[in-house]
Image (cartoon, rainbow, N blue to C red; front, side, top):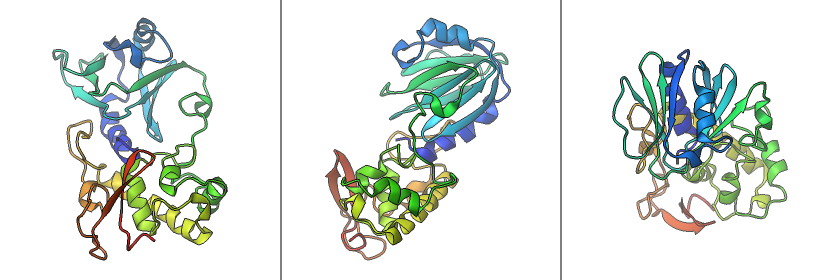
Amino acid sequence: MPELPEVETVRRSLEPFIKGETISHVQVFLPRMIRTHDAETFERGLAQQTIRALSRRGKHLIWDLDDWVMISHLRMEGKFLIAEENVPKMTHEHVRIQLTRGRHVIYHDVRTFGTFDLYQKPVTLKTLPPLKGLGLEPWDDGFSAAYLNAKMHARQAPIKSVLLDQSIILGLGNIYADEVLFCAGIHPRTKAHKISLKRLERLAECVKTILTRAVELGGTTIRTYENTLGIDGLFQNELYVHTLENEPCRICQTPIRRIKIGGRSTYYCKSCQH
């Protein structure tokens, strides 16, 4: 958490406030979050840079600046907040980006797992360490049952674990992996290499449908996630299995079960997911 829909929601809500704005000053309060440079170099590098665009790849936000590309990852609980004027440093505030028109972009992270990487242009995005080796997003050309079959035919791990592998499908985390498997009627412990091409067609369709719908609803609000403007997502109202242990399945009324796979809580319906 946050997963692809939540990060896309952050991007869409943040971009209108920062696109075309110039950075006047940067403060780093937790230097270990800056992975490619020391904090002082990071702060100097961003000063006087104009933010040309904000894009996303998987769970990464990509900041296109004049001379640099900055890649940020929210990890477990990171979020960007907008302050219209200078405000006192917040608890759990770790990076502050001041814009020339007075607005402040505040990176807030209770768990402090978020990261920032800065690369000088020109660069090829897909070769940069945070993005290198990542798989396809559901909307990329080439994402299909055949693609999934090629990636999974030799994988003997449970399909739930394979869906969380970012080198195969970008952006899926625990919540949406559970929902996708329910949609596709696949038991989460099924070995990935045993899933038929026909069933993979259904899986690919479910990945696209569920992530598209989650993006439309602003993501899922569970525990600490809220988007940049402090507005809760709404996809939690459409969950079929995730976090619903012992509640009746919305399709067959069988109680939802919870198990552990790869150390992650996994929710499923034993009747709908064979």
